[in-house]
Length: 226
Image (cartoon, rainbow, N blue to C red; front, side, top):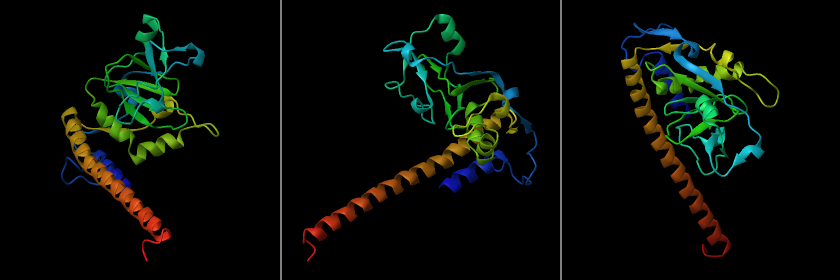
């Protein structure tokens, strides 16, 4: 399933999910290569605060562990902070913003998909893309093997790797026209949803198998099998 997911992303960004007769190593007609530097409204590092600044109320400060890769936020455990309106406006997240982990689990991605008030934490890089770019298209490309390899190769630091904006923006991204971006996202998510359901089914079967094994062992050592 992991191999299949990466194959889907590879085919998608080679144009093979939406174009016929695409030659290997060539972009489809109308596509071009770009970088996040050219696709963003802005990028900003999440601010750093001391743990003693946190409170029970206020604006959520999102950490890598507080956001799932599909953008679901753990509002219960995320720390809160009382911020001035000026600071909040500088760092605030809006629906559709892209978040990239820059320290530790580098390259982990999320799209903020909520309406509650929140800002990114210190280990996140916050991108807001241009309106003519489908953020999920970029999200899926950055999940691809080629992008994750780029993040790994361009991180620095021993023990706790770091990633910065200049190195992220060295990555070349194949960009289709906006209508095709929407179509590619639909094609990717349709295929990946099938893989997700298969994974859930396999996980459930493994749990059932383990339960059966334990039941057999229990009966064996209590003398119920003879």
